[in-house]
Amino acid sequence: MGNALGFGAGLLVTFLVATESMDSFSNVLSIGIRYVAGSPAAIALAVATAIFFWSGEAYHRAWSNGYPPDQKLTRLGDLSSGFGAIALGAGLYLLSNPFLAASSGVLHAAGKFGSAFGVRGEPWFPRLKIDASALCRNIELISRIPGIIATTADVFSSKAHDDGVFTFNALAMLSCYLIWAIADSMLLPRDSIVVRLFRPSLAPKIRV
Image (spheres, rainbow, N blue to C red):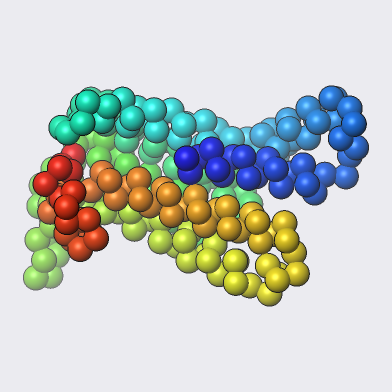
């Protein structure tokens, strides 16, 4: 849902701001191609979206029979999501947004790759003992927070008051980040503090 919403909203905005006439198929096709391949950033984001669609299907199949999920398919989803996050980070960096490139890209990829390769162990922090596999899953969720904050700020910015297209795009991206965060929370281990606080009824069912 998040991937489809993000891709569809971006494509719609591209058509809304296009200066070409929409009365010919060639113009419509040209605008669409420009959206997915008109620049290095556009290509990176299109590649990320395609990979995330694939990883979403892998997760869907992994959980299609309920709990427990298919571990092989779950890790395939994690691995492909890691590569998708790298492509997303590259696209965001090319769009001059290094902060979101680091959080939504690098940080999210680190969590996904850690989950994909089955990182185990119990790293020690001051007065805190955390399971490495749980840490990777929590990193995935934490990486969504900067995007949620940034898009929320865009929604309430002065530019949003004056530009309807900007507001629509910001609301769409905020919705995407929230959907992605919910999806990430569904993969959290049952002993995660997030699950215990916000989804206690599902805690016994979630263990990846």
